[in-house]
Length: 490
Image: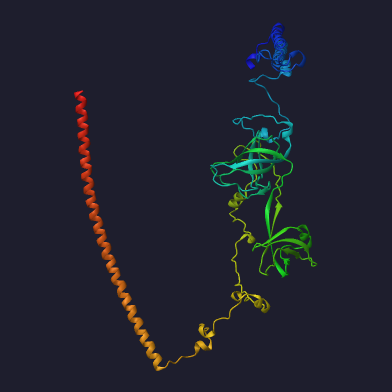
């Protein structure tokens, strides 16, 4: 199409190209004519790119535009260079002098000629700052994962700046859930405060550190410029019942005032044992206690949980990289990470006492015996009725009781019978011990004999197999010699 458009046609050529099409339309009685509709519909026998009315019109417009450009170039060639540059602009490859105004005084003072400046331009919409959402992934050569709200230097288009990214992921229900660190080998989303750029713009992130290591931290692409972004994190509130009714309970230690309870009216509750409930109303005392209803009756030892989501504030730091304003080799003023500050001061990380694991001490729970009412026992079948316990004489006496401490004096006949039974058991145990020892000796002898027989059998099998292989080898050698002799005779 571009090659065909380079060659303009004359008026006569256009008329001659249109005449066969009109004749074909008149004779064939076929498709749309050019004269009335003016569309690009082709008639039977009409060639594409040759007789299409729309293509012909485009060729005519291109030829007209080339003619105007050629006339403008010829008219500007006679003008002085300054006037021609004011109209046409400077040609690529020209040496020009650029005058910069309203620049900081540190720029010419600390200018280093060995590092040239690259001048670029920004669109009018790219000068505004706003909230930018991007898809980011930690670089595989970067040693550590990135922490949310840690200062990071971004390289977006012409600009480099420092900001505090907030990392999050999108759940299947479209909730933007905040994450503390970037995934190890997976993409995530990030939001930062910076210049507004078009979507699909590449982003390079790096951390400036004095240590010699791989500095590129992450790479990503801009998804959208968001006016407001609601990123949330999980909040779990824990309470305990202090008064339990049938399906209602009064909960404490979850809120601190009636105003907080009013904000969570109707919220879903759940106990550790799985009983579901709902927040109803705050109690008369303004101490955060409230009434809640549940599916089943609670126990005083149950823990009541309320799972909620709270928004995370987005930081609005925008610190442009001003390394050209600082003396060469000294570095620019930037925000350091918390790890760098602690390393310089030799301080340990802050410890939140609420985040430490504490030993769980649970008192043993004692349950009352099952008490079946007498009216219900009378209505139960005999198989389901509670049976009387075994007589106390058959039970083992409790340690320390009078029955356990009482001495038992046997009669002479009882002592003689007990002695006889003890002798019988001793003889039986000795006979069993001898029988087991002789069985072990016989088992060891049998295992030794079986191992010897297995070895002899393996040796005999090996000899038989060896003879068979030798015989097969001789037969194959004989057959190969016989085949060679027959070929020679032929």
